[in-house]
Length: 170
Image (cartoon, rainbow, N blue to C red; front, side):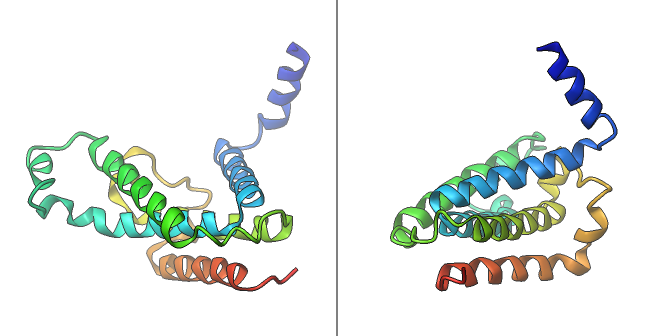
């Protein structure tokens, strides 16, 4: 067993941890799309986008605004973002995308959907201050997710996800 860990340390020793994390996220998203279809990645990307856009309005709301008046902890905004994203994802998958699981099992479509979802996730992460306080975008990929490219990543990812949900290309 120690031989395995030594080999793994030699292989990943020169690779930045950000690259390993991005490859891991790609593999997880690809497996998720492969098993349950690209509709779930479309719902996840949409829920992340909706919750990231609406989280900035939380301090001014009637019921939730009181939590934000004192100095909020570093985990309050990301926690609220996660809970809101989970609720919206549940509503989207159960109510809107419930009958659209016909595209599962295709590795090419799953890989493209995973890349589109990763692009959307990183673009939203780079523009959300609550998430940047937890962990900044790695300098390896930060130039690709500057404010000038955010709209391109989000629209391009959503178009790719919509294309693979509408028809079967492969």
